[in-house]
Length: 284
Image 1: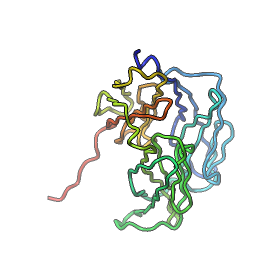
Image 2: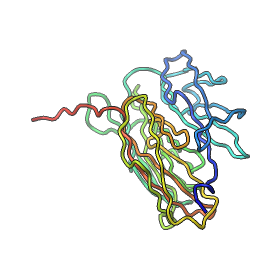
Image 3: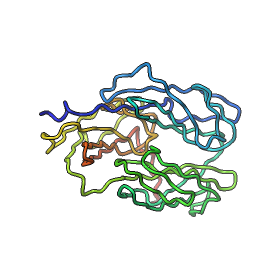
Image 4: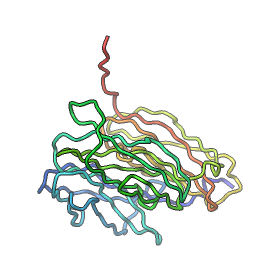
């Protein structure tokens, strides 16, 4: 059996634009699009938009109203085949200088049901020292991968797959957002060999990138489910196997996740660079 024929369809919930920048009292409109794993747009599905924390912005339909200065996560939830699928974006209210937030560890792995602690530090404009922020709000994307306490302790759920730990930090009147990559799953269950082509690509702003893949040692398994991720998630989105960037410059990891009905999985990474790298100012 060709394993590609037996793949279970997944959907992507896409918010466009994925980054909304507002002043308090200003309003913006976003579009929510649902595509299947072949990149086809699905119609007739209802969605619900929300913002966390809700004090940052208010949602009415697909209109986002800035309430107070801060940074939040915009969440679009769609019911599809008796499950809730979600897409994510960023809402930034206030155009002042923002903190640079570093979440540590930057990459981590944890088994389902286990815990791991994250911490966040900030770098303020004009100061190279790392500072402990006054307040941190933690979030898990997607939320079904687990929960995280106010002190940064992550509790993994029973789901396996990639996740993102997001920290919204506050220091004086400045705010910023940082994130870290997380794999929930026992690496001993990684039985499928997955290969992505290309393994490295540089594209220009406005271009898209088509990827292909092969899955080895899976001929006897049906019901494989496959999903594409971009890390960090706000660089762009996937429509099937087509990556659509949403920034003019950036670098990220493309992750392909494969899992069967018993929880055995495989994954592969490739790298995409959007635009030209920033100029280097080295001392001679």
